[in-house]
Each structure stands twice: as structure tokens, then as C-alpha cells.
Amino acid sequence: MFTKFLFTVVLIDTVSRCTYCQVEHKFFRRDYAYIDDTGSFYKVHTLHKTWEEAKIKCELEGASLFYPEDDDEAAAVISYWNVTQPLFQWVFIGVADWNVKEVFETIDGRPISNVYDNWGYGEPNNGGGIEGCVILRKDGTLNDDKCENKYPFICKKTLATLQWNSQCNMPDSDYVYSEQHARCYKFHLTPRNWTDAHAVCNAEQSYLAVINSEGERAHLVDITAAAPKDTVVGDYLRGGVHLGFQNKKGWVTVKGVPLHLSGYSRWAYGQPDGGGNELCGSMFFSGELNDIGCFHKMFFICEHEVQILTEDIKYKFGEDDKNINDTLIKVFGKPPGQP
Ligand SMILES: [Ca+2]
Ligand SMILES: [Ca+2]
Ligand SMILES: [Ca+2]
Image 1: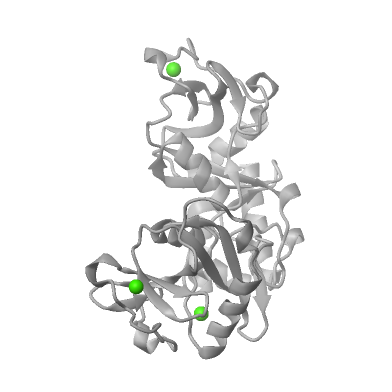
Image 2: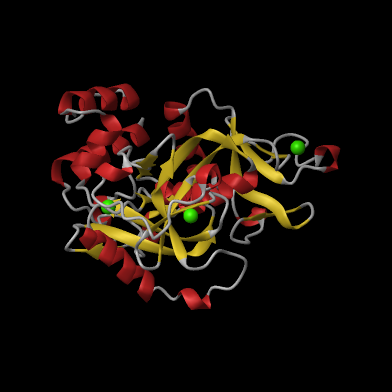
């Protein structure tokens, strides 16, 4: 009950006072909740994933796969999970024998005996000889399970490690604000295929960049020219970057706008030339557009629209204050603002 009260206090505080949020407002992302008792943010992921996929997903969100430090954190997080996803019986946690077989360590290399290690009866049993990843059951006990099974999971970010990018109003300090375009961009130097690039931008609360004007094209060309691309070795397609448009019975941006209505649609000479084989969008380093096979690994740029947090809260809880209040009552069991 005490924990529920603190959730409520933090959210109301955020709604009433926060404009461009800073660390002191205890805000990480709109999809993460802050638990005061543990000094950390958590998100219960509902899409089931393998242990490795879960670990990567948390990292893409700027967090890490949760594991309990101690009894108190296990209790606080299970209580939160009971409120938000009461049907989930267990979640993957950031503990596995990823280093030495049957020696369980956290994802940051700590022996499990140094953190929460309340194994269930008879566990870990390495069932079938293939159990190397740990799940936390709703009763608070641990079990080693198959890493390839797909389960829900929880990501965690500690307040102590939160660094706020105040210009972009987001926690990722790699995004750079452009005053002219009133938004932020991040040039990704890890080449990915178009679909993965799209997913990475989404995990960063952004989208694969869409050029909406000649000025924005010039800006993306400048960002691309400045990025230390030559240091990146490996097997990927050089000379262009993935952008947020694709051919879905016609070229359309990831914002759902036909490309020719988006404000910029200058194809490079002879492009598009791929027909059904090149269904994804990119630009050459010059800024002219090129259709490309979606499987090609390339650099890419994410675009982030700067929003104030009250908008974020509305996005999460509904359009008006009444919806926000109703949702808080439903989740936390008492009307906000009442003692
Ligand atoms: Ca087991
Ligand atoms: Ca844009
Ligand atoms: Ca092409």
C-alpha cells in the first residue's frame, strides 16, 4: 500500500509541475514507472521474448534487463508487476550462466550470491541439461529455464544513472538538437537492416528520420558528413543511410504520409530503380533519395520530436485530465490529490 501511494505522488508531481523534465522530477520515459523505495524505473514488457532478445530490448531502451538486488527490490517490483500485469506468472531476469556453464551471474558480471538468490525448491536443476537463464516467479522464487523460451521481462533504469538531455527532453545524450528544425537527430554508426533500424529508433522514442524540407535535407547531409563513418569496418552498404519511408503499394513515410506530400521527395538520378526488390527508403550521402533492398545493412538516422512531458502523460493515459485521473484511480486505487 505504501508503495502504491508513492507511485501516485510521483505521477501527480510530474503532471502538475513538470514542463521540460529533469532528473529531479524522476522521469525517465513515459513507458517506465518510478518506484521510490528502490530509486529506479521499471517497465514490464508484455511482448514475450527469448532471454537474449529481452536483454537487447532493454539496452535499446537505454535500460537493462532487471534482476532484484535484494528481497526489498524483489517485493517492490513483484508488487508493481501484480498491479500492471497480474496474469504474468514469471519473467526473465538479468541472470544467466552466460559466462561459465551452471555458474549464474548477473548481466553485469556479479555472482548471484551477491544479489537476490532465492531459488525455488530443487532449483537450479538445469532441467534436460539445457537450462541456463533465470526466471523470477510471482511467488518470489527463482528457477533456471531454457534461454530460448519466450517470456515476459522487466527492464530497469536506476535514477543514479539517469542523464537527461534537456534540449531534446529525453534521456539519450547522443541526440543532438537542431534549433532550425526544433527537433533532435541521432546518427547511428552501427549498420543495421531497415527493419532493425526502424525498431531501434522506435525503442529510443523516435522514428527513422523523414525529410520534410530542403532545409532538413541539408541538415541530414551535414550530420552524415560529420559522422565518423570511416572508422566503421565490416560488411555493410556504404554511401547511404536508411530513412523513414518505404514502398507499401506506393512510397509512404513512417508517419503514414505519402512521400510526395511529405515536403521532400527528390530521388537521385534514375531512382527509384529497384521495382519489387527495393522496397525500403534511403538517401545517398548527397541527400537524394534511393530505393534499396530492406535487408541491406546501412547507417541510419533517428529523428526525435521534442515534446513537453504533460504531452507524454496524455499520450500514456488519455486525452484529458479526467482520463488521467480515472487511470490513476484504476491503477493505484485512490483518487490522485486526495490524502
Ligand atoms: Ca529449472
Ligand atoms: Ca523530419
Ligand atoms: Ca535504387
